[in-house]
Image: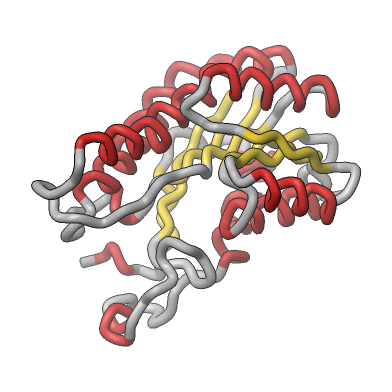
Length: 242
């Protein structure tokens, strides 16, 4: 039996890259998937490619109304919601004293406020189904200081704190909340430009593949991780060891 049979998932930032790969993997494991993103053309094309078990919703994760529409789609089309993957994020690198206020606010609205908003909208539906799994995408930048990553890093440190407190609050409802902290990942828009010097700093001497990250998410979404909550799951090839 597929590991996510009869499970309903919502994945933000799913029109391309890591989010799209997560969607393919969850669907291959038997899940029905609601894909959300601001990139409507790419999202609709992916949903068509994935077939009847996928839906696309145009979605700004900082909008409460958009979250209501996305969750309503999961309920109306598939019957509920069991898995939430807060994957959508903005990314930029800049010295801390040079970032523009509007740029900082927008990143925090998407990366932090958007993740909290998703949790707040998903939880009532998960309670009705007897539990669920929430997976928040943090980053290696959320576990160490990295030059020029002050704003992005701050958002990903915040995700770890949100995850831990939410896990405590929601544990009695059988809702698990975990954080995933990728390092360099090949074939993505955000961490694909890894040069030879950076590779030498990774004990495994290579970036992660998309499939390796998605495999971790499948595990956390499935009943195989039923006693794991409130944890940081670092997938960085050992880069954070020193």
